[in-house]
Length: 436
Length: 113
Picture (cartoon, rainbow over the protein chains, first blue to last red):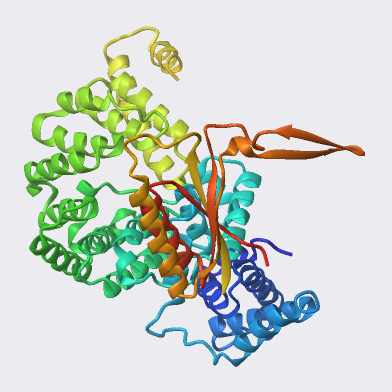
């Protein structure tokens, strides 16, 4: 069976990754078995690959996938029903009696599935992996890469998780009111992870995987609709829509990465910015700050500045100070250092950055490179770009880093040559090699 | 309906003097009453000390008998309850109540049917 046929199709037509998750979620509701649902949907996609080139795309591709997958699942249950007759018959009865699922109904099956995937009885890394697999439509290989484990290890982790959901009876529903706040943190973390995965995919040539971002925003909106009084859900959604508002300006027509400071702010999506602002205002009125709300507020400050030069960095630094108190992680400290560079200068920022244990994170090296460049420590800046290039896996980021690195190295070369250095090439090269 | 084994893990030996055993037993009794009233209770049992256990191990044709519990350690299964529940959330809710009453860790594990 083609294990990742959904991705094969997604490669041809991006729309299908969303239909994959939707179809799996609907089948899980109908059959109460994640493995069966996944297999049936994958079979349906495989059949689509085979048939659609001959028959043409059906009028409702999503409906076709769900109907085909449903039939596959029923066939499989019928075949196996001799083993566990009564159970299979009961499931069959339920599944076949079910009217055709409403694809855009009020209750989103993916939301149910999301709460199942993020159940506290599952380990945190399992929750993220399952959600990426079932709702993000990522392949086991991609998730394995994201977690830095081998593919068989991740496959085993996923299959154990699915077995636990089935055997322990982890419910397939949105939790009851009393349990909601506790269950929400894990869900929010996973949704944001899908968003960041979509925003800057860990591998592959497309910098922005629009479908994953759109999926995360959609799930964020659903969460917000379900829990309108939950400030961190508002904060999460606001954060995502602010970032989403800049999508079109984040890459040049040639596909190159464009930094926030260099983006054409007139192209930012005003509708999304207004949505984000309204959410941030609503958060402020609740006065129960959290990490997502503060990050949303930081993004609101960026959105308020008509030009990069008008950015209120002092306000951003204050917000990062607050964020670092409630969320003291090296990545937050790195982002704070970027604000420190604007307010107190690159020297102060570099001292902070050099303390951070983030050698495996390309952004750490990119930030260092930029600070070193601003301090005219060009050779070190080139080395930092090399270090960033060594750990990035994203093609657009790699291109961006290489462009900056080479520009810097060329400028440096020119200055060395013009100052009359005889062995102009060797110093840069030999020094570059040493710390790598 | 599924069935779940709620296992109570307790330190070996007599409880420390700070533990109000009478209070705990009252609370545990109340949880059991609640389970019975909800038609969730299937069976419960409290166990003697782990040192009272005997393990039988097949070894070829013979059977090896050893004194003491199967797993060495400082904590052992001290008692258990089997409950009926619609899903893990409902079983965990009973587990939560039992953990609060016993002040001990509870393992919730589904029975195979």
